[in-house]
Length: 158
Image (cartoon, rainbow, N blue to C red; front, side, top):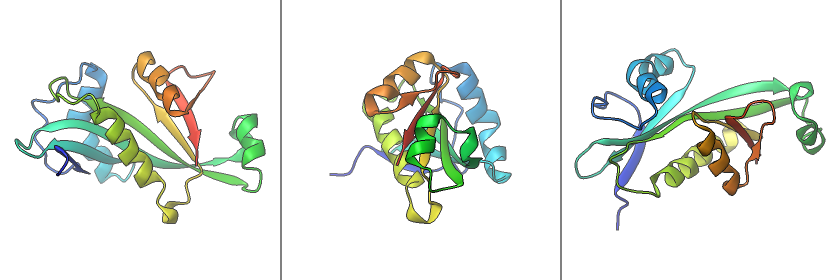
């Protein structure tokens, strides 16, 4: 049995009907995501309903490089053999209000983590930047650690 959604790169999808309930996220997806991809700053993926080809969710992922000195002490001890740390930043994880699948957000998170974990990327840490505090708190149930300085950000490591 095929899952009801396929996750694919954003490329000419109709976003006019998309509404997650997070206006700043919806605006970014509709007006900036494509140009951010074209500039090479992010890769954006969308979950598309297989039957009606409607976008039901989206997320963006970007790679960053950080010097270990700028990382929280916990991660400095865990990752001390690397002078620099390659980080995957996942943000704009949005689910359409009409998607009808409560598990879609979790499936998209797993998809994003799978993409970030590709061996050729050598990512050691993941940062999830959310647009709502309740989302940041929800990601903690997946083992992410809250950032005490940025309430809408959580960390995880591979």
